[in-house]
Image (cartoon, rainbow, N blue to C red; front, side, top):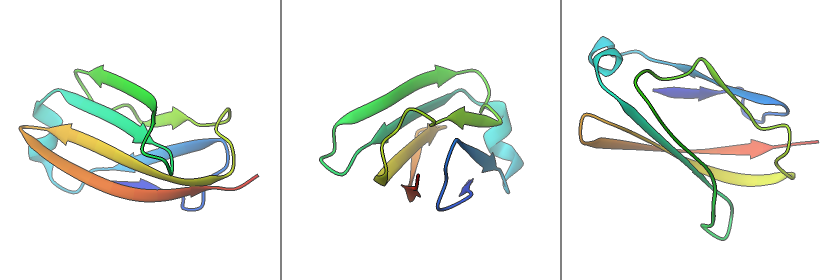
Length: 79
């Protein structure tokens, strides 16, 4: 799973390279630089994008959980 663009401004998008991930529920958490959760969701399918327009500029860590596996990716918000 790839998160783009990086750096981001208003939205982040997802690209799934392994179709096995399309068949399971997703949990998404976004953490700020202090590891405080600033966004959380659980969905049946991975959404095409997440609105981050209310995030302040900085570095964030996104955790995407599916099928018992977790993927972590860093992204930057620039204003």
